[in-house]
Image 1 (cartoon, rainbow, N blue to C red):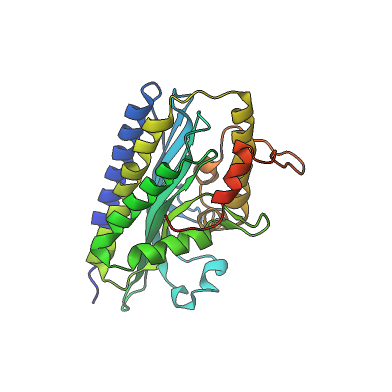
Image 2 (cartoon, one colour):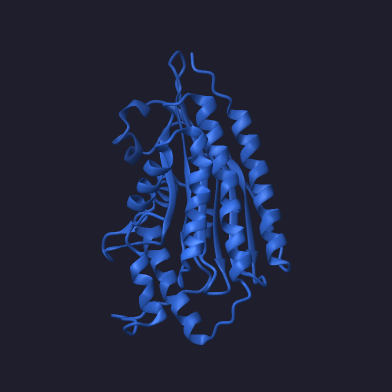
Length: 304
């Protein structure tokens, strides 16, 4: 029978949340995270709890959220079992760390990361489990060297797990973070994986840990490089406009958001990823050959 160490996963995820919050606070140098610990009341659809942490009005970060959650349930919603009939009649646990960072400076990219573990169990049967996660970068004013550094960091952390892992999980990220109604990617991608269990528990867990720790290694040097660049109202307004794409993706396509809302998850924690300020403009078109128009060249998958 498969040996699955749920407690080891939970311990790692909670420590990862602590570590990333400390790193982001140090980078910001001004604001700190406020924690909102929560638990599910008896009789609710889901059990468990979590720790939602949000940083606001920082010197570097306008808003950042780093959430840990561990939810349990007696059965999955019909929308989940329709695609995975083997999960019907099983209790489940889902735990993970999810974060989204919205910087002040438009030259600093928005970024998202998530690592998670799911297990469904039924007495007398093998558990059904998998890991998932990844990280992606959403620049408004891209720098080629930042994009190359981001992807090289991702490639390096994937290398010990197989020569094809980076290629496959980068391609999965490009495909996942795509807005069909806009015909563009959400940003320059990174890594995305889900349903990972074919390597065995220990190797899959090790990879999830590498991705979780790799986020800060990939993101914080970019923040440090760009956070002091001067910008004006034009750049700020473009940043707010492009944040609209983030909202569109998360509310229409993101599987984690949809699962959380459909399964009765905690709304405030689920929608923590929304930017604090955003705008839409009817039929916006950047000026030809402008810095804003240049972004379009980065919203199609490419090799870095």
